[in-house]
Length: 159
Image (tube, rainbow, N blue to C red; front, side, top):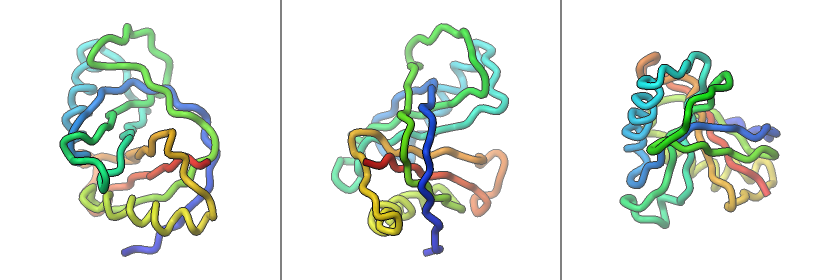
């Protein structure tokens, strides 16, 4: 396992457009596809937007078929698009968060999260706030980079 640098960051609240997903986290790509189609049909500009995966449940304690997540996009600019199903507006809270960068294939994300919760938070001496969801920000995508070059920021809200 690569040694990971854990950082303490303070975030501003983040307004997102999102599509909900129930099921295995590795299948969230289906919800991202739905979101992309919805935005494309409405000619919403997505240049400079950040892709965000929001995760509500612990996959070690919740059955895979019942895991709750959202595929989301933080637009670089305001939009006046009417938000209707299956898309919803979501806000991630601001404040103190722990951050770690995962480099490599998405298949390694579960292991990275396990390390982050079990060892990474200890490096900061902080406790997670389980009332707010953890999330990932995808700095690039499989369309842009080889699996070993993917970069994903992992965020845990802190108490």
